[in-house]
Amino acid sequence: MIYWQIFWAFFLPGILGYGGGPSSIPLIENEVVGRYGWLTVHEFSEVLALGNALPGPIATKMAGYIGYQQAGIPGAAIALFATVAPSLILMLVLLGILLKYKHSPKVKKMTQLVRPAIAILLGIMTVNFFANSVTSIGIIQTIAIGAISLLMLEKWHIHPAYVIGGALVYGAFFLG
Image 1 (cartoon, helix red, strand yellow):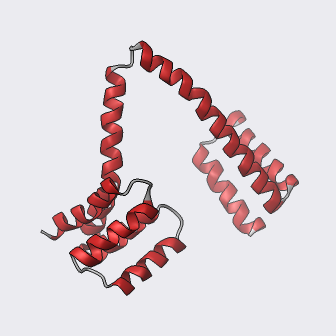
Image 2: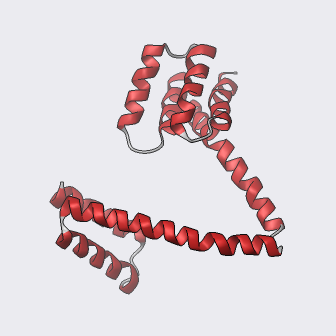
């Protein structure tokens, strides 16, 4: 029964919390504190503060912690799944619809219109990352890391995970 309660406590805020983690926090609090009484308001605020201190989506961190606290590792797994399940289900449904109508002229036109917008958004994000990097570590470090990463990826065909890991290690030892 506890697993079912954990699932619903995080699935409902995932459905109703339009806007991501911050908008679903009051809904999670209502379920966890008000409905099931697993935490007090003070304990919930401490979990929220801990979740905000760690990187990543707030709702999944809170779900994992509270699920683990209530039912161990299976509870954490169920809470995490329940948090991402609404988005996952909606994506699968929309992807099914898109695949069903992929030969439709309207769908083809829509994808043609969306691609440039995505390219522009990715370009803007890249420029912002570059500007932040130059401000943080300087132009020489930024260009060196970018050039070495490009060589590793394109010329030597090193897996991106190793390139990212190497950049993280470099940053931890030489830039931190």
